[in-house]
Length: 425
Image (cartoon, rainbow, N blue to C red; front, side):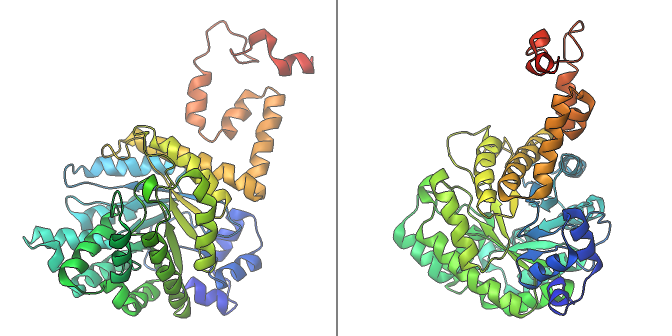
């Protein structure tokens, strides 16, 4: 029985109790949100070594995901595990293994073993890479091979998988007729687009969606319905291809719910500020309130090296208007594979965006956190301020850089002219 089926049957699971306690809400209220499909609990039945069970969706704290993984150009398993640990220490709620180089099974299983939070993957990557490893073109992939890889990920205990089921022959046709500056930028979307155009066949993840649902249901593995035709630049935002894919995904959400399968929906990557709210409202309406997972969004294309800041701007607005799950973007996005420090900075930036949105959304714990910080500042309680800091490591390091003879009760910005100290007397 999946979490969705249990909620519909009026059963409160141990996972529901854990999430309700974490969020500070009633377990009955949570159960009803899960029954409606508005909240999910990504936890595969086969998952081990998971110490923090979290929910994603309506009325809950906005969650943050960090992507790690090897590339075909650089394979260093210990470094990727170091990134995983850095992401979790920085407060990531989920980690996705997007490896495309080396022993993919080993890397995924190592991540599952080491990660205390939910883990996601994109199985189509492995299916395509294994095809290439055999010396065969990706466009010759067999449907059976794709589904074998998906089942393998499910059996290993992956909590959620990205599947680009909404990339169809129709949506590709609409994209080509309208024209795009950057075409298809999603790796999974590009793999399937190339496969469909060459074989002149429908996307197997769409055509055999019921088979995919059967696997997901067996393991209670969440399907993250991927945005394979997401805009890769500001000029392509909110075009026909993106919306056509979203309409298809809305139908797939309903079909998943009918089978008792938990789903969330992935959203656009590059969106200008003035279109973000509309995109969030549209997704929630078309997809019947299913949790929304957003990459960024990135609000300008001209800031390589600072895309963690660019995406935090977009992420805060997106979450404020309904996004439930933010995928981080690191400073090295569009430039290179991220370093351990890039991962850390990306997580912190996304967490700032998520928290700012949670205050606006009325999440009680978010406002209480800020209030505690305000009280600590009024009391000039520096230890408490550092404990409450979203990034206590950086805050403490900066505080310790004060000149040796500076007054300990205040900061060096104002020194003896500290406004709080003068008013308090």
